[in-house]
Image (tube, rainbow, N blue to C red; front, side):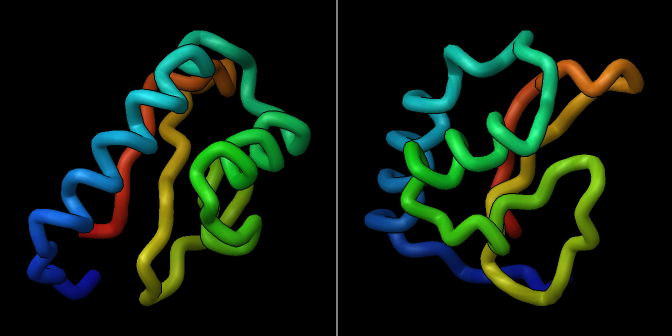
Length: 78
């Protein structure tokens, strides 16, 4: 992945999104949760990457899960 230089505005937006998604940590990942993450974050559903998806060279929001598919956190393309 390419290392992107992020502006202060982008970093602030990401922090706001991560804070809004925090209540989902501990939930079991599903397609419905992926749609919720998309709606809350404003990211297109194709740019929300869960355990069943392949990452591409784009600015994306990642849903991190454990082996039982329980959400452990979120992250952005660096």
